[in-house]
Image (cartoon, rainbow, N blue to C red; front, side, top):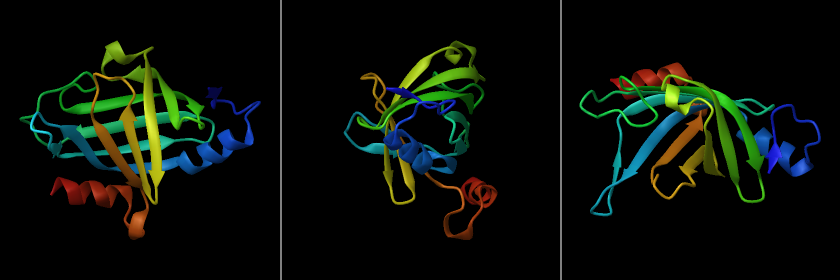
Length: 155
């Protein structure tokens, strides 16, 4: 696994991969598997920003007040920032949380698998107990800004 933050000593594959991942992504869907093997999407909006030097920040707002908080959120809101260690061979990275709204997340290393399909970044946890899937879209898709996407989903 290669450390992306700082980019020194990075191989061509690491630099190419971080280049594909870098940028602003707006939340398209958070998918939660159900007991009946269906998937439920949460009503949420969010933004993920990943820099070419491996810094990442995520903010997600749950629009459904009846949904309980989880390990990543408080008061219906998730906010974290940190750095990633990228492994482009296995299409995974470890997100080291430097700061978070939920204090228990600070200092944790969160393993994630990623896949880029067209304008989508699909993230899943590599932890067996976490079975969610999050789909992000490039923020400037079809001329729509991230702010317009948030307003559209909130209405």
